[in-house]
Length: 285
Image (cartoon, rainbow, N blue to C red; front, top):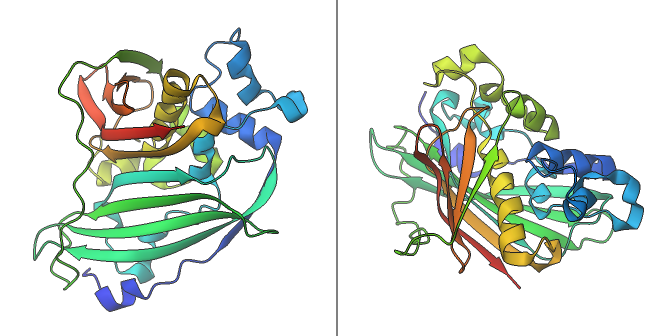
């Protein structure tokens, strides 16, 4: 299969309308580790839908709202679905998410990059999360997917902006967050049902020993840890986050968030001592 650049750049991703509830907000927070301490009163506010107006929403929930599914693997995109990697992810918050609402996700392709025949290609896309009734913008997501070895289709050859460079000094914090063996099976119920995270055969065909944990789940873990370290668990203070996915992690392994006071961060798989998120930066008010 070879990529048809003209067809891909013209590809239309359908708008996704989604209604979500306080229970959905609580489930998302639980799926990224916010309920690990059942005596933490502040954090219980994110996972208890009985709190009414006192319930809080983890801002990274925007990552799963208005999600059109893993549309890159659809046959009419002309992309080989076994050779796609999520390269980078950024998220800008324009206003806090309410605990319930009706939103629309609007996804668009913004750039198609070609590194040459036999080399990688990259596709840049963005998704706006808006209030369906008012049109107010809650968040903007930007993601880059690497098309492994699928270059040579005649796309843009301009370089991408360099990733955020981490400080050269030792991180100020090291926070370990365990994941459960069923974490991917739970997290995928937020809407990302891609088989790589549940089907052993699909995982093997993609070059992994077994189903891997969603990179977006790790992004949610990083967000909740950094929100505590940098914003005292106040979701309204979060402005933006960006990161690069550098290696997979398997459900049951431990995520170690290594963070600096300026908002820089990375994440490491403790058991294999491997960096899984790199070049991270969170900005807060």
